[in-house]
Amino acid sequence: MTRRSWLQIFLVTALAISVIANFFLLGFIVKASRTGLGGGIVAEALVGAYPQEVRSEFRRLLKENRTRTRAALRELRQARRNVAEASKATPYVEADVERAMERVRAATDELQRMMQGLLLEALRNTRQAV
Image 1: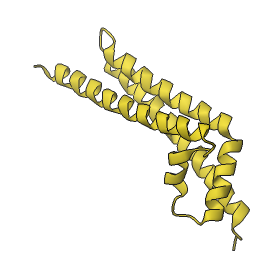
Image 2: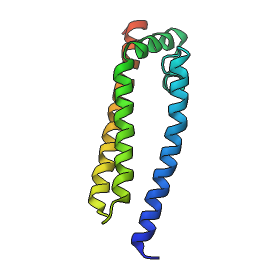
Image 3: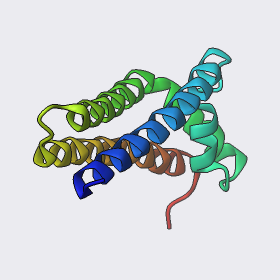
């Protein structure tokens, strides 16, 4: 096999693993949002080490910002789909895959910034700043 073939196999495999992981994560998020947990596992992973009042406030803020959070998750999923499409394109153009991967990094960064902003707001609302 050529180097290009190995790269394509690697990219498709990495994408498949990512899609499967996202599928399960999305399932957990959907289940948690339907049961009123407000972010479920994602929220608990982010704030699990904080006191109960911070976690409760974070969940409240997450519910309050559900539209923004879902939009950011949709953006990330679309960016990941774009990587898959670019990696399957004929002819294969590595620069297109790299640009699509950059969009995934940007969407991931935006989601992380939003979650950390909500956490900071929850801390501000529940803790006395020194």
